[in-house]
Structures are given as structure tokens and as C-alpha cells.
Length: 164
Image (cartoon, rainbow, N blue to C red; front, side, top):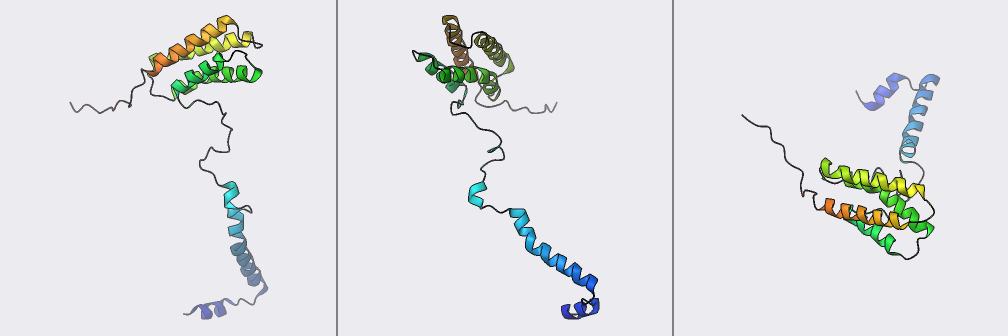
């Protein structure tokens, strides 16, 4: 049976069937527009699923050592501006998260977590400027970060089920 014969047998001329075929034709034409949207691909192209979910700060460190470098860099400026202070607060608050993203063992991560939490509390007590005490504690945090970064294993251990 040919296609033409099957259409003839379905009696397309009836009003109900014409409506069905018209609806299907409309959906076939509009579905690509609905799926792809109205904007061009260049405007909406994403390189990752999380690209537009949040903004990554310009001072976000590349790794644990970079965190220490960025804190020390901000401490070295003779005058602490509001922006510098805000960035120091951010960097200290990110310490535990950045350390957790490494292969650092938990027993080496915990001191970083506690030191950064203590430092955050001290910074919040005096939001206007950096006291000498806070500067010394920040230097100690940087020292701890640098020591901890030497303890990061190059690879995660490979666990193999014992065959015995």
C-alpha cells in the first residue's frame, strides 16, 4: 500500500482530521524554535554547567599556596583599604574550602580549618582595620598553609581489595 493510498483511505477531508493534521504540522514547525530558543548560540554558549550560577572573585586563589601568597601580598601593603580588608576576609574564609579541595589528609586539614575559623572571628571583632595582633595571626596562618601544602600527596592512594 502506497503512502497516497493510505492517506486517501484515512479520509483526510473530514474536519476533525484536518484539525489534527494542522496541529501536527504546526508542532513540527515550532518545536525547533521552542527547543533552541530565540537567541543566538554565541550569546548563550556555556563552557560548563556552573558558568552562570555564580561569579568567581578575581582574587580567588588557584591553590593552597596561592592562597598564602595572596594573603601575604595584601598584608604587605602599607595602608589597608576597605577593598584590601574585604579581600583578606574572603581569603581567610575560603581557607578551609580550598584546603578541602586538595588531597590533604584530614589530620592536616583540621588545623587549617581551626586556625582560619579563629582568624575569621578575630577579624569580625574589629572590622575597621587590621591590628598588629591580627597581622601576626595572619602571618601564622600563612605559615601553616605553606607547611600544610607540603603534606599534600601527589596522588590519592589506590585501594585494592585484599585477595587473601
